[in-house]
Length: 135
Image: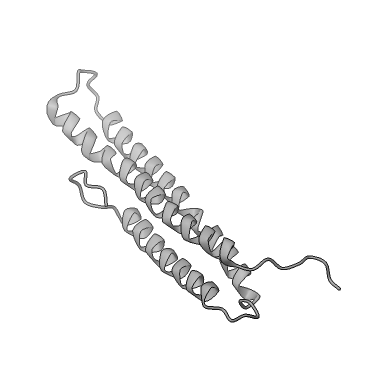
């Protein structure tokens, strides 16, 4: 993934795991759509696809949650100091290390959203169109 020389937080790993599972589910959905017989895919595939799309949209929201969490943690740590002086290099290093999860959770959320949306779009355009007119 993205290397900013820090350990991934639990939320980072949750995003990576959840995004990976969703990507595998999207790939299976796409394979099911492509390998469907001439009668067309099972009607539940469209509903499954919609659920997977909805779940995929949670990835950037989880990233945003991680961003806000890291920002709150970072600014809380610096607000606890009584002195109102210029930041030292050690404080800057601590600030960057505390702020890094804010960037990685957002990046991971977007990183896993994009391939999930692409595979979902491929499956969407591969599904045959069902006529809305009932004859």
